[in-house]
Amino acid sequence: AANLKLPEAYPGLQENMHQPGNWTKLAIYNGDELPEPPAEFADQPYEQRKFHEGICASYAPNTCDILRGLLPGVRLGTMLPYLQDDQEQIQFLRLAPGSQIETHAAKSNSRLTLHLCLSGCGGSSHLMVGGRRLRWRQGEVIAFDDSYFHSVSIDPRSERWILHVMVTHPELETRDRAKAAYERGWVWPD
Image 1 (tube, helix red, strand yellow):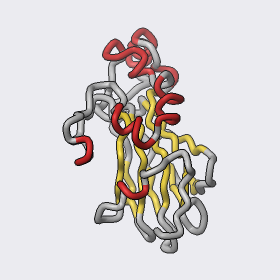
Image 2 (image 1 turned 30 degrees about the vertical axis):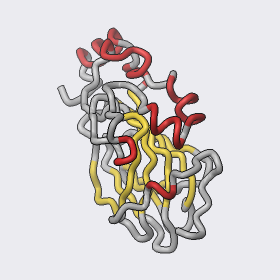
Image 3 (image 1 turned 90 degrees about the horizontal axis):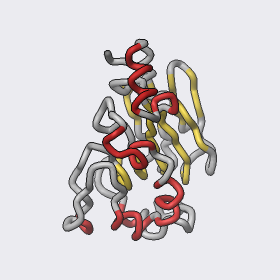
Image 4 (image 1 turned 120 degrees about the vertical axis):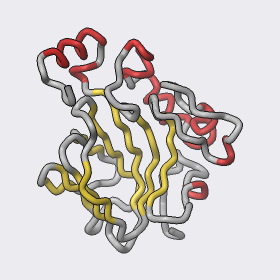
């Protein structure tokens, strides 16, 4: 980790995400799922469909400013139904060298997942989605439907850091569109 070069846009993030284990995350926004905040923000709990202002101010003010108006759940609040508690999220994710995340899938096809690789993007690290092997490139976004089975494999020589964004599918961005898609059976589970 000593040779890790995160963008200067994220000061202090590396020092606060080296917890034991192969997976560390720091949530900026967590939709309707309200985890315990990090220890340094213990007096600032997460709020439903709101960005965590302490984490934004300390680690990612520009990222928060850019993304704040783009998530339908933030813009529309509870007027937009979420089909799962973690429907929309913004997190920094760190995976240790050699980590493997077993095949898994979302509960619904109502969102898209975006990965922006910040560091450790090369080597043999890859994401398998529905049988397709995708490789991260630093500064480039991978977008996928996480209702397809997917897994992760990280190169044993370096950590991988991403900005992980889950956002409501564009076809479901209003209450009326979500209701119509659900009634037509385009969204599952039903």
